Image (cartoon, rainbow, N blue to C red; front, side, top):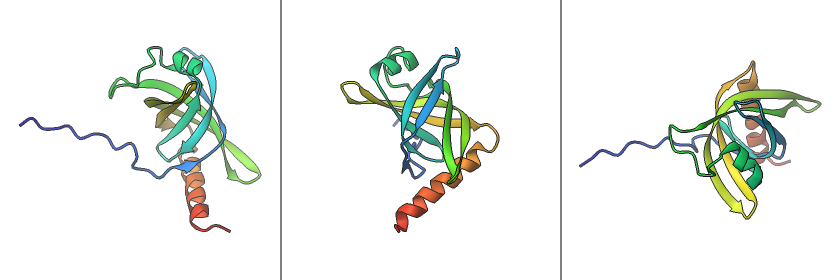
Length: 136
């Protein structure tokens, strides 16, 4: 019997719903703006239209493991209520699914953060998770 390779668990971190813009930069320097659907410590789910998907994933097929698409992400999170901080993170598009006729979701797994980016995302996700458990 042939052994089955273990699949990477893409849902090993709790996600929080977030509504903000995100800029996706392709390796050629082209930048596209999308909307964040949810965020975790290890990645982000974005919403975009078919035209954006065509630019990010030319064949419009879900990326196969190992053939992920490298991108750079830029978005802001409010670490302190009055002061949002900019997060810049390299990542890979690892998931794609169609939600509606002209709406797609792309999953981007973070690979590396600039500066304190991971700490800011970690703090923000932790705060939103705590708020959802203890509604005011």
